[in-house]
Length: 161
Ligand SMILES: [Zn+2]
Image 1 (cartoon, rainbow, N blue to C red):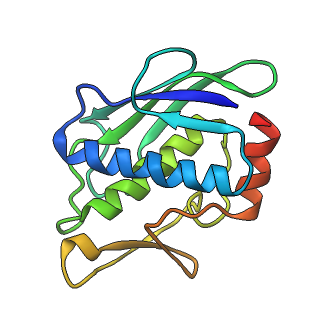
Image 2: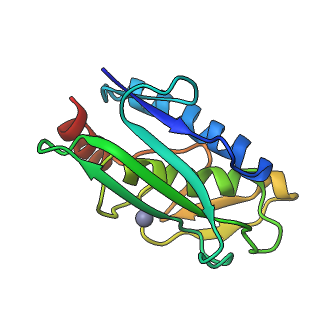
């Protein structure tokens, strides 16, 4: 089991909670599917994903930008996840931010392709009755909660197990 530290220090308060929720959701997906990596928001040993906001990312995007360095077997050594400072699609609820952050965290873990569910290339916003109920829809799947496709599970297992 590898613990990957997700460094959220210095991140704006609008992103902190969604990132923490993404970590919790992803850990339960990893555990349920036997993927041997766990994300932690405290401690600072070992591989680290540093999360920042970036003014150059357009607020109407539902993607961030991630760069990662890996060892020969594809395991991430360090990664940087950049998120839009402010997401401007109407007033996005924390659920939308969680999906954006979770997607980038999985990229950081070495999942470089797009397939479906959390790692879909294209997602559509679905408005809830209020901002807290907003979802992103990938194919027929609405998130949160974050879900990984069988292809994504195999990809992560091939890297981390
Ligand atoms: Zn992506």
